[in-house]
Length: 105
Image 1 (cartoon, rainbow, N blue to C red):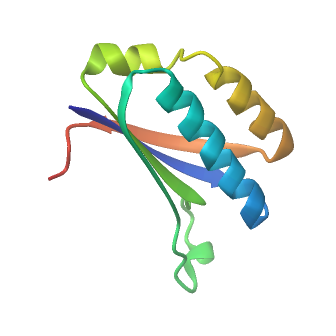
Image 2 (cartoon, rainbow, N blue to C red):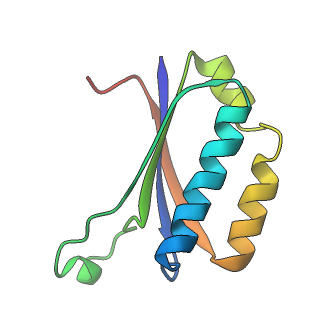
């Protein structure tokens, strides 16, 4: 099993309903690919004062679980993925940091 964990950081946090839709769109395209065994997404829980830290601070965390590295590589070209990314980048610009890793537990 391989997990692809993404830290998604919007330049300006979208409204709650829009963030929910962004996460739902990513989930749909990933699950529809047939490559994903599990999908999870959660909002970042801010701590007072963290905005003073010079770091990439998440708006949300997304984790996709696939069988192996071949499935992960294929997931990066899942039908509709690049369209979803382009749609949301044009509406609410964001940055992503990620790590590909074995399950942490």
